[in-house]
Amino acid sequence: MTSINTNQGADIALRVLSDKQMEKEDVQDDISTGKEVDKAKDAPAIWAISEVMGSDLAGFEATSTGLNVAEATVSVASAGAEQITNLLTDMKELSVLANTGTADYSTIEQQLAQKTEQINTIISSTSFNGVNLLATDADGNGGSGLTVAASQDRSGSDAPTQSTISVGSVDFESNASFDINNRTEVTDAASARTALEEIEGFLRYATDSAAALGAGAQQLAEQDVFMDRLSDAIQMGISELTDTDMEDAAARLEALSAQEQLGGLSLSIANASPGSLRSLYS
Image (tube, rainbow, N blue to C red; front, side):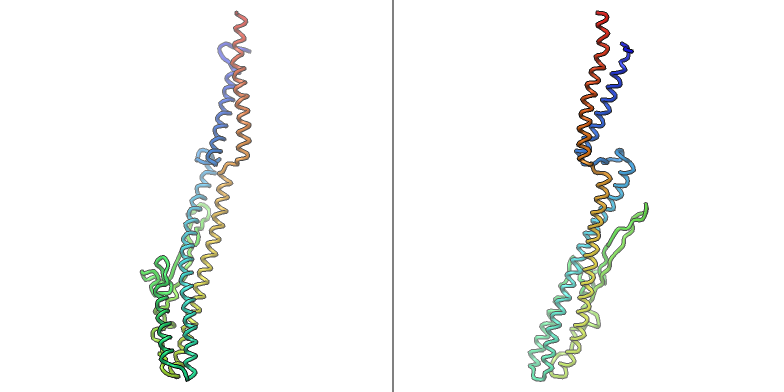
């Protein structure tokens, strides 16, 4: 039935056209932002999940930065301990030479003193970011090591908890096993034998310390690699939830453009229908 009061066909055509235009605008927005779920109103549940995951991701990235700094700090200390080991090896060789009984004890002692001074310089200067793991006071505040956040652990909807990794100071300054500043001076064959025994002990301590610091640096590096992989996985998960599938969006936009054109044509036809009534009275 055709009515001069109500054009039902035009109403339907206009509603369909309006719906298609709104859908097209949504798709265009998805393409321009790259996000299918960009605001809470787009998909409240998915948006909430992505926001929680996003906050976790930010925490992981901050944790990774802290691990990088900690790894550098421990690696610097490890390099210092290794250099001390090399110097002690030289001192051991000098002590062995002094034990031959025909050595110039004065010259050997002078060389030993120089290397002892070098070791003390390394101990006092081997710091990174204000932390020296070769010293008694590692951080200038009485600290005996380095503790760094290792991960952010979340269970269900609970707030995340933080786990840590600690690397202790090896303390070359006041540890009784490394009392190098009170070593026996080499003046004769007997003192050379005593000095050799002491240096052997210092060398064992330095070697064990360098190994411990190396293990700490390795642990931090491996944890950092894990955090990077975990961050990548979470980023992919967020992307799967919220990002626009560009191929699908482009196809939908093309289809909606065609439907919009057809809707406009349908509206034109529907609007023309009442005009046919005028021919009956003209």
